[in-house]
Length: 477
Ligand code: GDP
Image 1 (cartoon, protein in one colour):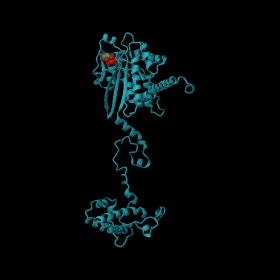
Image 2 (image 1 turned 90 degrees about the vertical axis):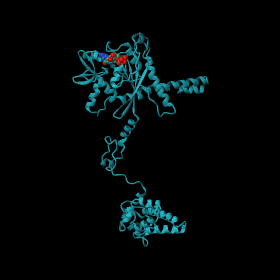
Image 3 (image 1 turned 180 degrees about the horizontal axis):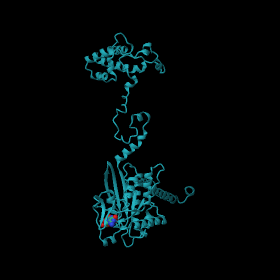
Image 4 (image 1 turned 60 degrees about the horizontal axis):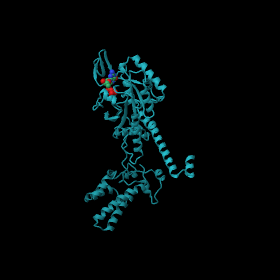
């Protein structure tokens, strides 16, 4: 390995200084004696003065053995390449061309150019002595715990790339550590199977503490908003799920404007988020914005009822609405198809903007495209809910047992439950959150800022009494 003598000077000097320091102690505070000893040793190490041959390996070792200066002892022991001190004959030729390419020290003599003092490590450049040890070779390195996802997990890749293709893994790791949250609202009249479906979707009992009302109580009840939160974990991924229910919705005799409390609740969550976001401490903002609303449509009507139209029209700019055809097992398959068609037509007719599935990228594989197409065509999802496990053809499944047979919740031939769950959890949960943030919340925020600005302008105009200077300016603007 080529090395210039200038690069060798630094370690020699440090070494000599240590010896001098040591000598200062052993020479009982006589600085001249200490200095002399240090200089002699340095000169010996650099110039091969008489007695230098093998001095480092033999004499320094003896010198250290004689004393109990642990610090110095440690320095020499820990000094990289100190093992090579034991090879007195090792002379390494230093390439002249290499030396010439570097700035040379003025006192460089022939010896310096041709020989490297044998006591210094031979195998590596002396500049490395004071830096961190060389990294382990890729094969010797402990494998990353994200090995399966690591695009560089081969030693060849390590040499050729900078490494930023691991950024998705870093994001993945952080997200998993933080956990996920999702807020789902269920709306629709009582008895359409909302709570049963939610429990079937997430395999939990979210409505343990629910109090069922009698028919009279239900008529008197106004729309309430209730929240149920649960932490669920699957394969190390934590999801904080919040279900917002709307008991009393559509139960009264007069249901006009019964969508209002729901709309207010959604706006309140936006407002709270807007306040938190504009506040001083933005670090641990709790996001309670509603990401999706499953709107349950009765299977017993003919398409949409006025209440359904009113609700969806009032809320489609605030939340992602996913229409659900409830209790699909009460309908025959042709009836399900007919009702779905009618509902789709009416949604179009009334200009209701239900959640739009994003278009597939052209480079997606065919299976994914087909799955996506099937999802889009299933709207409104015709679902069946059940929290009981029944035995069907020797298998235990979630389903509903009838005198004529069993309807299976998770059988795609019986209903769209699996499609709904796939969409909600596996494929579109993040998109639902993104649309909430980027579209619905942005709309709310823009409106808020606009009305705040209008208020400020109005207030200023009122205070200045409609003067010419600022009022005309604001008008111009
Ligand atoms: P919610 O008031 O909308 O929450 O409705 P529930 O989940 O409490 O369900 C009301 C009743 O409907 C219960 O007796 C359920 O067993 C039943 N139910 C729920 N889902 C279905 C379904 O898909 N089909 C049928 N036939 N009944 C259902």
